[in-house]
Length: 194
Image (tube, rainbow, N blue to C red; front, side, top):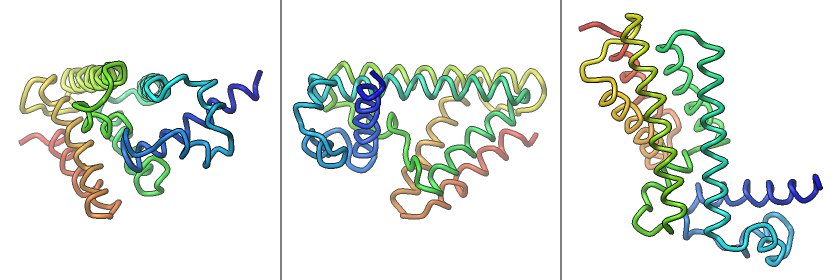
């Protein structure tokens, strides 16, 4: 049984890398078969269609993200430090190229062409992340650790857009350092009383 889940996990990991490299339409089952070292019918055994594969991938990605955010809350009591650690996570992933782009942010740029089942999962990821950021912003404001120029919900959406935009800029410039250049002032602004 573990071999079955390992193959499915290998397929998902490969699909994730291929999506980050080239988007939803940037890969096929043949590409996955070549990388994973299996035949295309084996992929269909695990995921009947590309829609099933990418929907499952995004669903698992959301679960991983939610678990990561929950761990941040458990291990780091200060909301400002939680936001800083969230940004530091992405900065490290971009710098060492382990996850140079959020798969949901990349897929969001393709929403007009995505199958609805995949689009629903991508939108759910954004709602979940925005909710967590909103909560962190509200807690940070209450504790006097964050200065918000706008309502927490607006600040959370702006924070999320800035982090995703910083990923895009890093990719566009081919410079991982661009991520920190863009996100550091964001954290400074939230921490500083004007």
